[in-house]
Image (cartoon, rainbow, N blue to C red):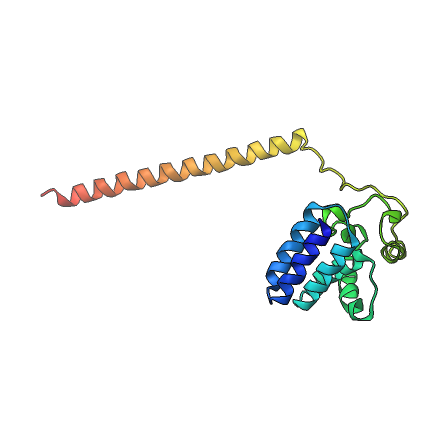
Amino acid sequence: MKQRAIKKVDDAIRSGQLWRAKEILSGNIATEPFDPTLYHCYGDLLLKMGDDIEAGKYLFLSGVREKQYEQAISLFVRKYTKKNHPNLFYTFPAPARLGGLQSYPEATAKDLQDLGFSSTWEKKRPEARPPTRGSKIKAYLGLGLIGFLLLCLLVGIITGIVKVISIIGAIMRP
């Protein structure tokens, strides 16, 4: 599958259809298991298209560290490590959210370790807390208040219409 996809990508690039090459690679990355070669091709293509930060993500994950990729990788890492490193991990495509450093290419594993990742970590985000009874009550009270205000508005509009009709009726009588 990978070789066929890369051939299609090369053909699309040669014919000047970068958008088509991007389509092919992004589809493969989303549906195939983590493959550093595809990530390298995709990152290189994104760099050619001028999407440096996104290119940096895929080049970072590919483990390829070449001079022409340094700036893009650096931009990506700086953007997503400002507060804490889990933000970086959650930008990875689902197939690249591997369970530990040993599953990544050597350069990627070293960079992740330098950023503070341990050798293994939880792959899933912590689940959102279920709503509490108090939050449900607040939601119902809010909806009730909105309903009451809409009812008051409707009564006001009807009262206004009735009053306008009675004034017009009084003016029209001789």
